[in-house]
Amino acid sequence: MTVEINSDPWATLDELMGVEVVDAVDNGIGSLAFYGRCSTEDNQDPETSHGWQVGNARKFVEALGGSVTAEYFDIGQSRSVPWERRENASRLLAALKDPRRGWNAVVVGEGTRCWFGNQFSLIAPRFEAHGVELWVPELGGKYDSRNPSHKMLMSVLGGMSESERQHVQARVRAAMDAQVVNEGRHQGGRAPYGYVVVDGGPHPNPRKAAEGYRLRLLAVDESTAEVVRRIFDEYLEGLGDRAIAHGLNRDGIPCPSAQRPEQNRHRLADGWQGSTVRAILENPRYTGYAVFGRWTKRETLLDPDDVAAGHVVRFRRASPDRVVRSRRPAHPEIVSVPVFTETQLLRRSRAAGGMRGRAKLERTRTSGTRPYLLRGLVVCGICTRRMQGATVRKINTYYRCHARTLAPGSAALSDHPRTVNLREDVLLDPLNEWIGRLFDRANVDRTVTALIGSQEGLKGADTRSVAEKRLADAETRLRRFHAAIEAGVDPSALVDPINEAQDQRAAAKAQLEGLQAPNLMTEAEAYARIDSLGDVGKTVKQGSPENLSRLYRALHLQLNYHPVERAVDATISVRVVSECVRGGT
Image (cartoon, rainbow, N blue to C red):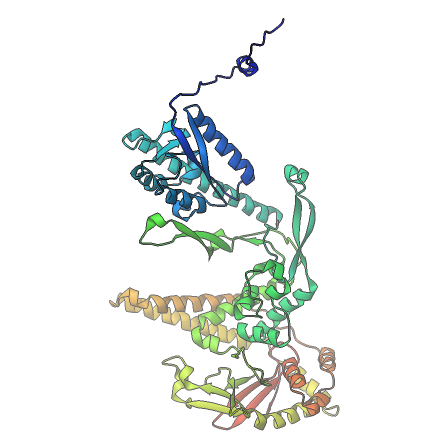
């Protein structure tokens, strides 16, 4: 069979394929501007997205005698962002006021990509005021503000767009949660300080594997993992976040943003901060388990008084029910689960203590180069807070405790002098002499005997009794508050005290549940630990500030100053437990 091809081959081909061709209208709708939008979260690239959207728009209007003469296309803009805050959409709105713009109508490729929620009802009147028509494919023509069906349909399209976005977000989050819980999969982003991202083989999704995607895993970076372990150890020894940061800066250890500048371009790389230490101490991923969802994006109104201004995205801590953890270890651990748990219990305990709990931490300035050998080691015998180093007349070093920094109503205020001062140079000579005698070759056996003997009867009773007392105090306070409410006191006035008491009760219960029997030291372990300190007598005699500071911390030295008796009760321990050798200087 022979098919006769007329003078127009395309007409013959369209007839064979069943394509209906609409003849162009002589008096068409004229020149139009095209608007489209593509989010960076789309699977397709912006070029492809632009191509199909403008193609839909041209096919829609060219049959009606229209032609697209200007294009406005936003890339990387969420549909929830108002037009005024989209780069090219705002340019289009500004062009409405220009009488020489060259077009009198606007066409879109897909309405749900351009408008979200009630955005269309806020934009359409502006187009109508400037005599510019809106052509929307879902309407089958131009928008007519006098047609109630058009208004209803555009409102429905806005709701569909919002619903589609929320459904996509929910599905993606549910899939990521399942990957973390069941597989412990790393969900991307910057690796926590102490880890590096390594190649984990082909991607488990066959399509992505075929496209060259690789699975990413976390591996320990030993050079920085040691810093993480040091941070946890020092915090459990009693140092605060800022004191730990100051020690890391003093030792010249690069902060995370300086260690990996390519991953932290938004940081100043200006050294360790207390907030950096806090983030490390509170990150459960160091236990080797994958944890996901601790922080989440939340959309908040840009201006609560102007809802039309839209929302902005802010990172916030997620509620506990939104955080998921893998069932099995997903990567090598840097700190053990018991150590991390003990750290969190200690942080909760200090937080429950309010300002009094924080004042017991080591306080230090992050500026200045003068060394304070006993920084964080001297405790006021009246209020039990750590005394803060200070320099008087640029010559003498003192450790001070000011009464004005005590909490109002504190019991220690009645006996506390205005300022408690302890001069460093008066204390150092007798302190060093005492330490030298303890570790002198002739006295080391007696020191070991005292260390071992101090463990007798040690079953964690002191720690447990303190925790039990805090628990009883918290429950007593709660009973008093409830009785006051029953007696007619306004409950709103007791919200903060009740919350504080409840936090203290929860922290005390958690501490009691986490208490374990102490790991007692043998005589051989005591000798080994003393040997690891090196020649203590030589270090004391040399008197180098750096050596002395390291020695004091290796001995876990604690000094309790009694200003009335003008005496210092010195305590050392060669391990991080409560057994100790006591002596006065």
